[in-house]
Image (spheres, rainbow, N blue to C red):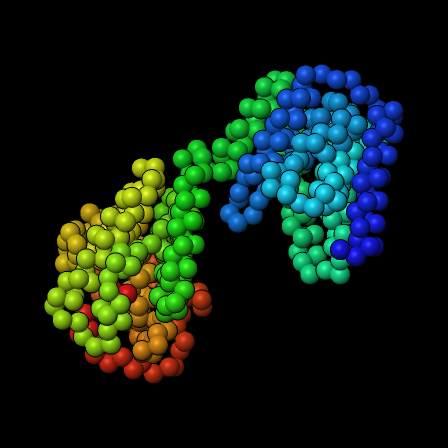
Length: 424
Ligand SMILES: [Fe+2]
């Protein structure tokens, strides 16, 4: 670390230490057991971040706000410094650890001071909005100060944008916690916090743990498939198309993310099928084809071993087990027909077929979009759910990302007879 960086980090820590007595003198610092309860809540929150998709949405400010409003900026800065510590930060170099504590404390203190300066609870809306903006700006400013001194400036703009996007939700949640505290004391804040965590994490449907498990399997799968670019691309595309189709066909919204993840696993049973069969260039013998057809059941057995709640288990397994069922009952492994086939499996079947026809492979050129659409029309009602096919064609016609590269000649003559078609 350059001396100038060290000096900067140290200066922020000193500024914080100097600000505590100044703030404590200027504002009230009466102790109350509630302060401790807030501290525990902040520590809990720092160590159980709420994931929203790929991002972590911080509710530090909303949780701190009742303290700022009811206990003043001095307590706010102390609790921010002590309470916003995640376990893995303990391993940071001391100066960075202290700098982080100091910058959180300063952000909270500044935000509390701005809140009071603008009229406090008497002008709650404007004062709170300004406090939320101040909190973000001070945090971001101190952090980027350190980064810029280290000569790093990539990502500055996007991180500012990320912060700007969280100001409004932060502001609204802070108000909620404020009223929860005003009317229900700490019980309101604790209850409100758990309701928030429950809703945002999806734990209401038993998702929280599950989503982690599923994304873990997905990462492992990516590693396993990394050697086979064709297959990886196929999985990415099938997941992408499945989600687009699901969105348009009235599939429950809360299941969309799960469907996206689960469609990655549709061919997971192929891990147990020999490469000699999977990558055989020519036609498969009957025995080999039978072996290939066992992949849905193998996949389902694999997925059965993963502890998932029933809502998830059903969806993930339905896709793995039934994605080769045909609408007319001629598919495998169970020969289900029509709506006996679970909706998610019918969706993935359409996406899988489309991808098999239009995806780029090493051993053949893709069909053009119009050829593939014609093929979908030919097999709708027999192989695929006709209403889903209609919706899918409509999506393809409007969405360029679903179209294959046009005007490339199709080499794979004889695909019609190739039993591997539609399996991959
Ligand atoms: Fe498959």
